Image 1 (tube, rainbow, N blue to C red):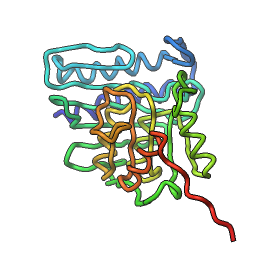
Image 2 (cartoon, rainbow, N blue to C red; image 1 turned 90 degrees about the vertical axis):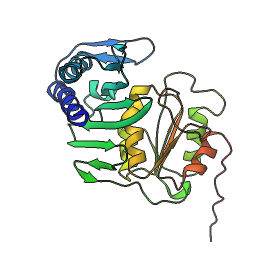
Image 3 (cartoon, rainbow, N blue to C red; image 1 turned 60 degrees about the vertical axis):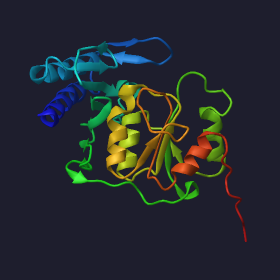
Image 4 (cartoon, one colour; image 1 turned 90 degrees about the horizontal axis):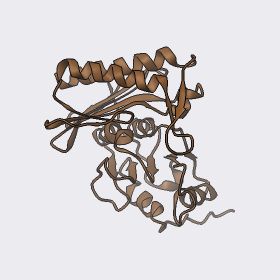
Length: 265
């Protein structure tokens, strides 16, 4: 029943995203620069809430726009009604609905749906991960030097020592491709699907990663914090990889990695 409700809620939010994409809608700014919220974010969240409440009126909800709707329940729904709002607001089709379901502190279900690309990622703990019902697996790259990475930048503290710009600079100078898509949920799913070999970001919120990190794990990948400890979506830093480059990427985000010298004949 939880799985069916999760799918129903994800598609309800995605329907709003699809209806408003490239249309006319109100945009406002939350605290900080480029921290947008659109009319579609609010309506997507409302549709998701209604779908969940129809089946589970007493479950705990945590969502980006509404915040915490605390209930005395062992089940918590962690919701991003539109992940990649800046993309959405600018007509860039890299955005999605992301919903994770947590039971007694453990993520048990995750769904990420980008209806604009018709990509529905899903995972249930212990049952693997899928893209449009086809089983997906992480990549087999074994070193960062041959990997394709993805990251995201916060709009603040960019210039802190060994911060996002420092790490990015080292990779780019070493000739390693690092993409920045603007949606952490999609970044994680694309690691799960083997499109990227690793993802790191210095600061995320629970709704950004709750579904995606489970999808990576169920696709055979590894997800930790920057210290290599078990990942919790309630702390900011994340490293998600195919598992084979994980230690090397951990080293890089902690300022301990050096690119291998390039030899020319």
